[in-house]
Length: 119
Image 1 (spheres, rainbow, N blue to C red):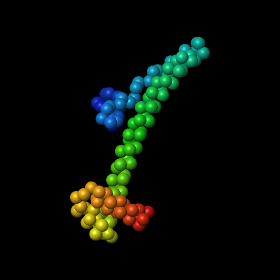
Image 2: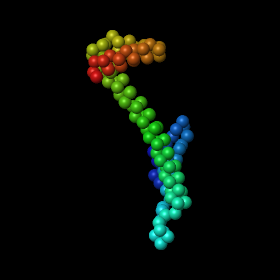
Image 3: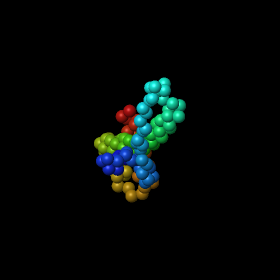
Image 4: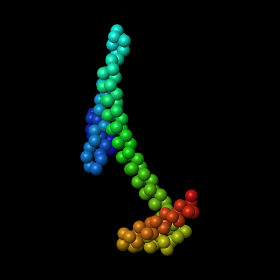
C-alpha cells in the first residue's frame, strides 16, 4: 500500500492486483450569473466523489486487516515472553514442537493463559 512512484496516484494491492486510489476530482466552477451549479454538474461531481470514497474505503479495509495481524502477532510475542517466566514447560513445548497442529494447540493455551492473567 502506498504511492507507486513519487508523482503517481495512491495504489493499494488487493490479492496481488494494484487498485488505483485517488482519482483526480473535477473542479467545480459555478457560473454565478446562471444561479450556481447545474444539477448535471452536481451529479457528476457526486459520482466522482463516490468513486474516490469507495477507493478510500477499500484501502482502509486492507490497512485494518494488516493492523489487526500486527497486533495479534505482538500479543502472541508478549504472551510467549511472559509465559517463559511463569509457564516454562508450556513454552518449551510450543517452541520445540515440529507439528503445526501441536504448535497451534500450545499457542492457544498460551494466549488463553495470557488473557486470563493479564487482562
